[in-house]
Structures are given as structure tokens and as C-alpha cells.
Image (tube, rainbow, N blue to C red):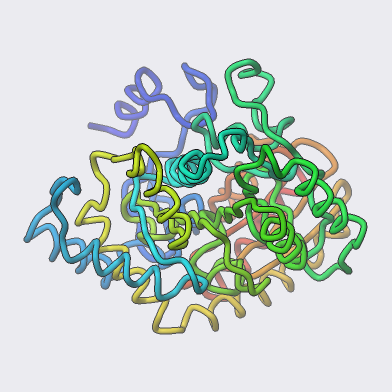
Amino acid sequence: MTAEELLALDAEHVWHPYAPMPGRVSPLLVTEASGVRLRLSDGRELIDGMSSWWSAIHGYRHPALDAALTEQAGRMSHVMFGGLTHEPAIRLARTLVDITPDGLHHVFLCDSGSVSVEVAIKMCLQYWQSLGHKAKRRLLTWRGGYHGDTFHPMSVCDPEGGMHSLWRGVLPEQLFLPAPPPGFEATIDESYVEQIHATVERHADELAAVIVEPVVQGAGGMRFHHPGYLRALREATEAHGVLLVFDEIATGFGRTGRLFAAEHAGVTPDVLCLGKALTGGYLTMAATLCTQDVARGISKGELPVLAHGPTFMGNPLASAVANASVGLLRDGGWQTDVRRIESALRSGLECAVDVPGVVDVRVLGAIGVVQLDHEVDMAAATRAVTERGVWLRPFRDMLYCMPPYLADNTDIAAITDAMVAAAVVA
């Protein structure tokens, strides 16, 4: 089929994320991807500044990931996980236990980030039900968060930006703290710490868990906060008998400069959600890890099993490529790459502070953000970045990038140049 024919069929039948049907803007047709570049049907190449929604941390067609996928496909592509098991999933679970914060001992492999959060919430609710604390059914989080688009995760997304009004009366009503004070290196606001402790204490009898994105609030606003607030959450939840869940779907696997954002705070949650970069962007897969205490608590209930079982749980192809992706990270080179990218982003975005309409420029690890005082003009911004050979996906009032770790300084310079140009016209 020609590109025109494919795009016509796309417009007729394909419903794209966060878009109406029929769509108002024709998407770009990608025919190949390699390294950090996407090749379009018209022959243009764009540097992918988004790592395919933060997942393709090693870029595209990485030989180690390609080899793992091909080798596993030659053995078996899938087998049900109920009553059966296989080496790739076993190895992956052991590896995740080894590399995540100490104390997380059990691994539930699932389909996607949203499902990982669903499983985490189910674990927490079922834990307290099993122990006879029937009233502990609510969740606490802070504003500005995003945890996925399925129903329970949506209930702990930001109540203003998370579509709560559309689902009022359907979503469970959760508890919200104000968003954590901004700034990764800012001084800790002790009054906010006191508010954390007071809120957890006041609602302890009804709280099953606190769930937050550690250090970086992703799709809810790309906001960075001091790791000290995570330590405050850990202290408050331990003191008052509430579980703590960290959603590291966006931050896990090196994006913030540490392998996991929880390491910035030096704390271990009771439950940890992983996804996105787990397979290096090759296949959908996520994981929910928990402590032995959580697992044993669930096993004491009338229903002693976690009532969840995705069809493609522990998929061998995804497990094999995840093992290869994590193996690349364990070699250690990613830390040098992320530090280099962080430095290049700071240098390249420095001039954006002088652009009219820009209210903040912030960088942490391999994340760069230019925040405006108005909604981004998506058409103008997309035109500006693609004209400079870059792909970005702005949202709300933000232009941001999360490039693959193998992006070199020339690539990063092109990305930051495109972001500044978009800030001018958006």
C-alpha cells in the first residue's frame, strides 16, 4: 500500500490515544526505526526525543535485544503462566529482586503499567481484608500525579487533570494531599512534612495505602520534588500501619540518574510498580513487586491467593527481552550516559529561560522540561520540532524530552534546539 492509502485507512479505522474519533490531525507514518531515529514514509528521519513514551531507553534495533527476541522466538513465544513456568520469567523475577530496593521479594508479572498499578492496589486492599481490617479501603496520594488510565489507577491520578469529573460516582473517591513542593534540590518544607504525618495519622483507620510517583511526577505535570518527602511518607506509613506504594513505571531503570528513584531517598516501599523501560520498549510488560509481609498477609485470608491472572502474564518473549534490557543496564554504562545527557540538556535549554512565555526550565537525569505560561499550540510546536528533525510530544503547558540513553551530544543539541524553537512559536 502507498503511504496515502495507509493514512486513509488509519483515519477511517484507527483510534489513537488521547484523540477523538475521527481524528483531527493526521499522524506521521513511521516505516523504520534504528538507534535514536524514526524514518517516516516520506523519507525524513526524526530523532526520537521521547524514547517511545519513555520506554525505548536503549534505542531501536539494539543488537542485544534483537538477538534475545529472535532466540526466544525460536524456542517458544508464549505459554500460559497458570500451572506452568519457564526460565526467562524466573530469571527476570530473580533479577528484579536483586536490583530493586532491599526487601522487595516477590514479583507479579503483568501486562502494562496501568495493570501493574491495578495489581498493586489489589494487593494492598486484599492485604488488609485478609488481616480483618475491613475499613482500610481508601488510598492517599498527592495532587499532580498520574498512575494510568484504568479505573482504580485513575482514581489516584490528579483529581483536576485526571478526568475525575467525567467519572464522578463511578471512580472510588480517594484522599489527596497537596502536590509536593517543587524542586529536587529545594529546601525541604517542614510544614509539608508535618502535613504528611498528620494526614496519614488522621486517616490511618481507613487507609490501605499511600501511592506516589517518587521524585518525578510524570504525565501529571513533569514536576520534580525533594526525595525527603518520600522518607516522610515512609516514616508516616510505618508509624500508623499503612502500606506504601511507589509507582516507578516512568522513573525506573535509570531515568532520574539512579536505577530507581526510590534510591534517591534510601527507602523501600511495601509495593513497587515497574513498566515502560522494562523491556527496552520492545514488548508490553510490567511488574509489581512486594515484600514478604504483604504476600504472607494476603495468604492468611479466606481467599489466600491474589485474584489476578493476565493471559499473557510472564510472556516468554517479553521476559527474554526484559532480561537482555536489564542486562545492558547492569553493565553500568547507562550512568555515564545519563549524566552526559543531563549536562547537555542543562546547557542546551539554558537559553529557554529568556523566551517570552517560559515560566520554568528544569532538568533531572535524562529528563528535560520547558514549562510555559499557556497551553502548548500542538500544531505549531510539532511543526517546529519536526522541521528540525526531532520528534517530541508536548502536552498541556509543557515541552519536554526523555531521550534514549544512547543519544549522543549532537542528538541532544538537536532536541534542545527544537524545544527552544517550539517554545518560541507554541
